[in-house]
Image 1 (cartoon, rainbow, N blue to C red):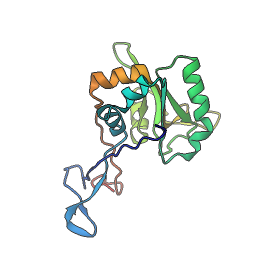
Image 2: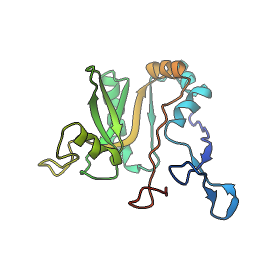
Image 3: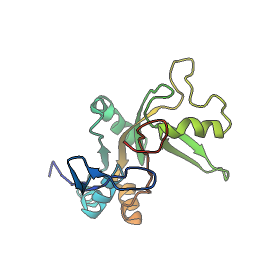
Image 4: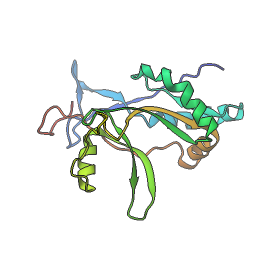
Amino acid sequence: SQLHVLRQEKVPCLVDSAARLATHPSDRYALLTKPHGHGDVHALLHTSGLAARLLEDGFTHLAFLQDTNALVFSGLVAAIGLSVTHGLALNSLSVPRRAGDAAGALMQLTGDDGRRILCNVEYNQLHALLVAAGDSRGDANDASGYSVYPGNTNQLVVALEPYVASLEASGGVMVEFVNPKYTDGTRSAFK
C-alpha cells in the first residue's frame, strides 16, 4: 500500500513536421519509440483507479515528481504544506529562470473575454508570445538578473477530491500538444 507502479507505454517517434515515422537506429524495420508525455500519468491514475482509491483511503493530496529534477525534494514538503494550508486545488513548484533558458515558464494569460489562466508556456514559444502581446522586450531579465516568469519544474501537488472529479469528467485525457526539438536552425527535422 506504500508503493504503486504504473507503466507508461511508448509511442512511435516522428522524424519531421510531415509526420514521417522514425525507425530504430539498429533496425530499419523497427519503429523508434519513446514515452508519450507528461499527460499520460493522469490517464493512468484514472484508468487504474488509483487516484480514486487513494481518495477513498483518506489521502487528501498527491504530489507528482519529475525524475529529471532531483532538487525538488528540498521544496516539496513546503509545497504540500502550503497547498493544505491555503486549500489549493493545484500547486506547481517553480524556480527562478533566466530569459532564454530552455525551461518552460509559468505565466498568467488573459483572454479577450477577461478569463485568466495560469499555465506553462514552452520556452521556444515564450519570446514570440510576449512580443505578439505587445512586450517589445519579450523574454528579458529584470534587475534581479532573472526573468519575471519563473521556470516550470513539472512538480505538481493536487488536492485529491477536485483532481479525481476532474479525472472522472475528462476520462483522464489531457489536451495534446507537440513540442519538437529540432536538429538545427532550419527547423525541418526533429532530434
